[in-house]
Amino acid sequence: MAFVTRFAPSPTGPLHLGHAYSALLAHDMARTAAGRFLLRMEDTDPDRCLPAYETGIVADLIWLGLTWDGPVYRQSTRIASYNARLESLQALLYPCSCTRSDIRSALAAPQEGVAHPVYPGTCRGRSMDSRKPGDALRLNLEAALAGLPADLPFTETGPAHSGTHRVDGATAMAAIGDVVLSRKGEDIVAYFLASAFDDADQGVTHVIRGEDLFEFTPIQVILQHLFGLPTPVYHHHGLIRDPQGKRLAKRDDARALSTFRADGATPADIRALVGL
Image (cartoon, rainbow, N blue to C red; front, side):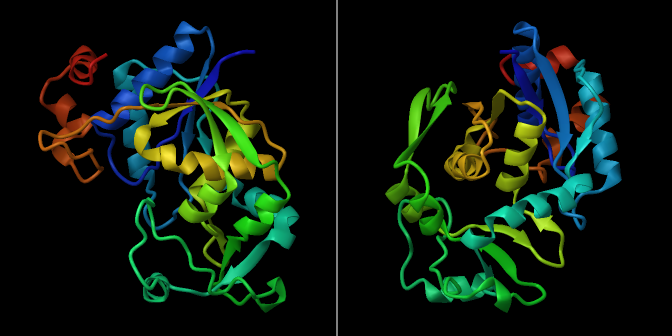
């Protein structure tokens, strides 16, 4: 089986050293395996994704010496396709009008051991016929899991999680809950849904990304099984952090690749800075 991976930034700001590490690592792994390296723009948020940022990302990647196979793939051109495919899950979806403050108010106590507040199921009893403009669509995770095997395996090769993992239903219910898959009227599709479709459509065999996204893997594996999609091999690498140990964000302009370029750094300097 050919090795196919992708670098999939969101064009909501400039690339920083952490992005450079992820892109370089994925590119190097693909080329070492005589495989394919793809570039995907995860640009489903029209308010934050700007053409100028995409132009800057492409310029930075070219400066780093990276090449990709085929044209740049843009999620913004595929929103209708995502929503059309979501129709097949109608029996497992329900509309939700809860705001973030509504959810916080409904949670009686902080939820320990979870990466994000788990939705308490306030709207779970609503039918799809009751959907109103602006309502989100949530996945009834308990109903979805009832039709799947008791545990769903996936392979991880990253340094912190290497081995075979299994998505346990009870753990998924406690840690993930009924996630939002799309928002009507905003043409916004959840990251983990869109990327699950795209990885399958692009023939991605290996997903290489930061360990901060490891928590999204179980819901992606669940969605892959619900839609009959293949599950790729996952590799969650370590993060590039600032001197205080905090992971880099797009607001860290001092570590933006464009800043390093302007200061005279070379691609070899960037490789050295990120430990490659």
